[in-house]
Image (cartoon, rainbow, N blue to C red):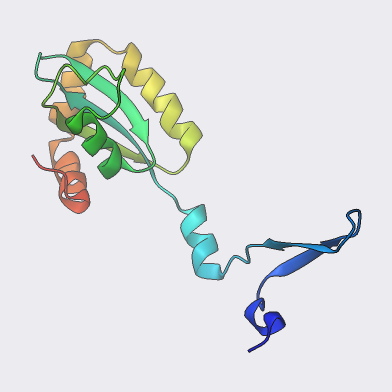
Amino acid sequence: MDADELMMGCSYTWIFMVPFPLRINYLYLTPDLEESIMTHIFFVYILHCADGTYYTGYSGNLTRRFKQHQSGSIPRAYTKSRRPVKLVWAGEFSSKDEARAYEKKLKAWSTQRKEQLIAEDKATTGQIRADLGIPD
């Protein structure tokens, strides 16, 4: 197999402004990869901290982010000194902008209003926890 066969599916741009040709490869998006990028899910979540407070955040990878909160691996995180934490609410959003806007909205809510949301969405949050392997 030669170099051209290996590079099938990639597009090239040749740049001749250097003493030798420099080839820059671009990723070719297959339909499956393009669909997975286009359907990426973002989460807004509420954690209940050991001191009784709530932390609200958003993430594109809730499992990883929850583990970071739980382990205290983020040095200046609000939750670092308030562990263990429990995921008590999570919502799915189709874009980062939507998730950020909803996170901002939730952060402005009173504790009572957050607790009402948590109580209303227990089943949905339980399903998200189960799907992502996050403990109760």
